[in-house]
Length: 284
Image (tube, rainbow, N blue to C red; front, side, top):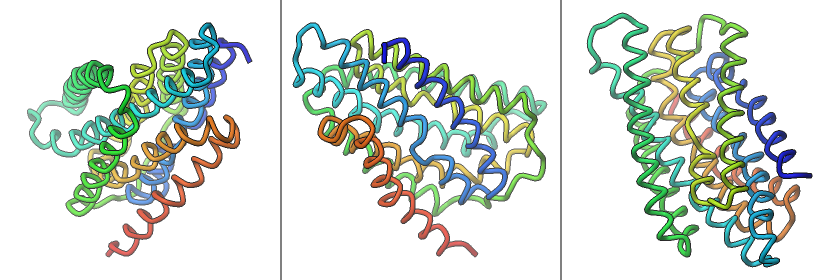
């Protein structure tokens, strides 16, 4: 497939799977829905697109080792980006009670501006730092995953109630979620095709889905539903980081299709399923 075909297919698939995230939270509640919504989804087409993109970027050197190293650098950056997203989610639970007593939409606009500004500043710092640590990308990614797991467990232990949504989300909101996710993944694949692997890894986890989930749930269900989903989503996000680390190793060995499938199954069964069992055991 051509680079433009990789970009389009990755973006389109990401948009489709993104639509289900808040639907899961609304239907199953923040606990189970948060975990389902953070199963490795958009990272799968992103990893395939980045794998193809890094192959194109290193084709001139005709070096398989160079391709695999570039891909590993991008995938090693994903857990660090997901750690940023976990902190982004935590902001959506901790900051709203401290916002001014303005109208709902004004508070929401302020929340979006503050959370995205802080994420962007942190992401720029991460890209600049990781660019100096590419040789240790997977080690840094593993450390970030461990930190995210600890933060996720802590957030679940102090999580407020996680109710189900009571109001349906309109079709326009669903389309907006899908479009934002498609744009984010398309950008990450395009960056990878340009040869900026670390930036692509961070861009692949741009919190488009988390942002649209928080905004649409806030507007349609009130503040309680998204706040209750934050802890499980933070914990569930470790599966995305786990998928990226596994993909860095398995895609070059097994090939894109089988490598992605194996990485997804291991991440889902090894991280998401135990988290669900634990949260279910803690449920009142």
